[in-house]
Structures are given as C-alpha cells and as structure tokens.
Length: 349
Image (cartoon, rainbow, N blue to C red; front, top):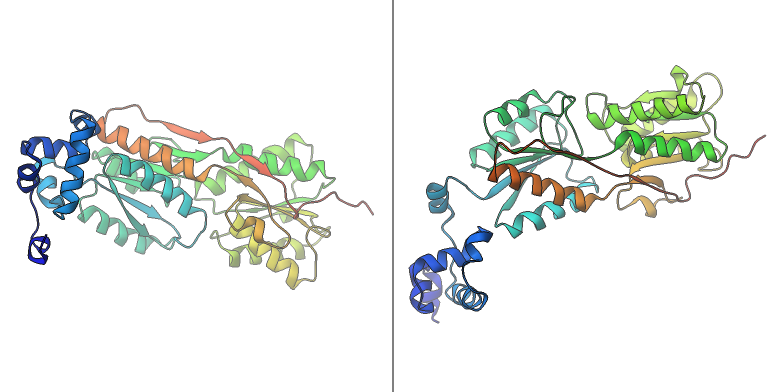
C-alpha cells in the first residue's frame, strides 16, 4: 500500500469492496452493538477487522452521531485526578465501556464548584451519552435535573441522600464501624475521628458510622474528639490532626480518618509534634489507596474493590442508555479491613 493510499481516509464501502461483502456487513462487524456484531460470523469479522486496519479505516464519529443520536462517549467527572483512589476506578470504567465501543472523556474539577461547572459544560457540549460522577454533593440538584431531563447519570463513591440516581459505592458506615472496632479491640478507648466534608455522602456516612460504633461500644464522644475537614487533602488532615492532638484534656490514642489522604496529614502532624505512630497514636485510613502500604509505618485502612466500582458503574450506565426507564440501582460493595503497622495494641500505663 502506498503512502498516498494510507493518507486517504478509507470508507466502509472501501472495506466492503476489498472484503467482498456488503457494506452493511462491515458496519455490523465494526460497530459497537454487540448483538449486531454477533450476526457476523467470527471468521468474516476477523477478516474485516484486518482489512480495516490495513486500509487505515477509522469510523466517522460525527456521521455516526448524526445517524444514531449517540456519540459513544461517556463523561467522567473526578474531584482530584492526582488522588491514587481514582486510576483503578477509571480503568474499570474504560475496560467495561470498551466492550461496547464507548470511549471515556475525563474531567478534573479540583473539587472546585466553578471549575466543575466549566468542565461539566464542556462534556455536555461534546454530546456525551452519559455521565459518571465522583464529585456530587449530597443534594446534587444539578445532576438530578440533568437526570430528569433524560441524561443517564451514575454516581461513583458517592450517593444522594434520597438515592434517586444510580450509584456504586462502598458501605461507608460498615467500613468505619469496622475501623473503630479494630482499634478498640487493641485496647484503645480514646478514639478520635477526623471526618470528611459533611456535604459529601462519604464524609457524612463515615461520621455516622463512627458515632454508631462508639455508641455500640459504650464509649463517650467528646466534642474535642471530632474534627471535620473541609477537603480530602493531606493539608486538611494535618490541620485537623493537630487540632485533635492539641485539644484540652486527654489526648486520643487512636485516630480514625475518613480517608487515606487525611491519614497522610495525621502522619505529618505526629511528626511535627514529636509523636510516634503507632506507639503514641494509632491511625486508620479509608480507601486503601495504592500508596497505603508504602507509608512508614504502612497504613491500616479500609479497602474496597476500586476496579469493580468502575466496572459496576459502567454496567449501570450501559443499562440506563439501553433502557432509560430501568429501575434505579444503588450498589454498596462490601468493605474490608487491611491491618498494617499503623495500629498496635495499646500499652496501658
């Protein structure tokens, strides 16, 4: 094949002519509809795929969008692309969407409302077929309105209070209760909570889980034992941890943080105050981000299956695209306690 032939964009008719089949067969073989692809036998499809590759064929997305009303793109809104929690979730999304010929467009909001609106408008202007949202606040009026207008929306790692939008998250309450129970079993009774932002379902539900388990264990929760972060960041974690450790009265011997980024801030605060983890203060995080076992000491954390969150969320999106009237599903994946070096038995003295 000459350079001139490669430079010229091949069409479905070109592929069909070389393959000796009807253009509709090529369309089915190369399309994103799995049922349509199944109508073409495996040998013929493999031959068409090879010819399409040799001819440098690329589908005309604009034409397909006009014909089908679908762009086969899904927008994904993330609050912080640098947070190690999200790459495995996005990978799960991409892998599942690729099976049905959909492409993911990422939008990073930096957890900033103004930037979030700008990114959302950019995704909508590109005609995405659906949204996967990891930035929603508990009320989520903006996304609820888009959902009512017919745009398929699925939340990841978040839920709305009224659960009116499909969501995939972990059982936040059960996870934090597991963390509190763990440090209590090691002899800790002054257990503080470094809570996440309360306008997020993750922050609110994990705080609820902390209160519920402390009550179940018969442990008092003093006002000085809880500090609420404004963001899920190491900087906020350090600020809150210093506040918890400098509070009047007996210092907590364990801190259960609402996520691993806040737990990193706890490490920083302990170092600044000349305290040791876990000898002076035990720390538990939430999410079991990929860096958790690399910290010194390695962080005890609540794990949930990140990749599966992405896979499940993509499946819910595809179901909503296929049938907008499908029942709303809210899926809670089970958490798991991963014990590492940041927690140890409390030495009574």
